[in-house]
Image (cartoon, rainbow, N blue to C red):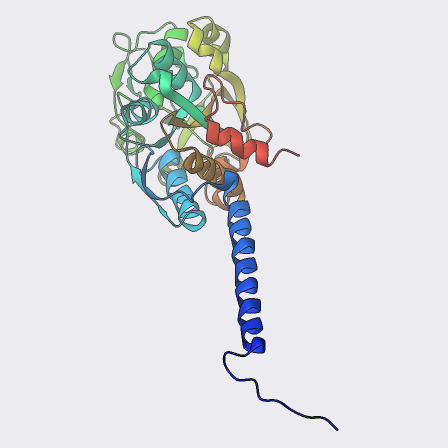
Length: 339
């Protein structure tokens, strides 16, 4: 026959049950802490606070890329409030990061090298997170223009980008390689990609230079409204490389026929390309930099669906960030995913 005994509070069996619950709770806490340590690289606290990202002119690739990256950062690091700052382009972006007005930015490698070699304020603190995608130099003229190379721009009204933009830097060098002085031999118009297409359409420009990923929405939009053509720049590469040390970051490239199908009509265009870098400084928090680098590499496909150039972001080439060294946080990320 079985007998049943009521277990009253304070009995040995009740204390045993409480001890078991306490042990179980302690074990759960240990598991949770280990899980958090694993999820947050290096066991560091999750990044939080407000950070700023300098992009570019509203209709450029930098601005579009920045807005899509912000969406990814918002999801992966909910404690971080990333705010986007407009700019004229690479040169101003580097000024903003060096001065502390921005935490991260995108800048072309040639602009970074020039900024560093000129020993501008804060240049020694610049660090890279990743090599992103290449900018392609694009010389746009109306259809039927007699311009066949940059040397034919003499005496014409030429858009060369805003004063502190990367395109302004490259345009000046390309004109020099063509034997022209940007301040004497052409009527230089210092406007951005937000204005130059409209000015060409209205007959206020004879040509404009642009340095950006392929395709650039502003040029696609212009091609949809008026007939334009792209002028080759490939003949300038040897002379460009002979100009000054920073020009070694330019390489000969070809715009594929499908970059602007309606304009190129199945024909490639020889040009010049330069790599873009994701830039910060050595002052930026290590965990934050690691998280942003992770977001960049993980978001390639999602951003690439809307910004075609971003499809070129690749883990195998992201670490090649000359002329800048990698930030420690970026190095931590690459080591964590090393096969």
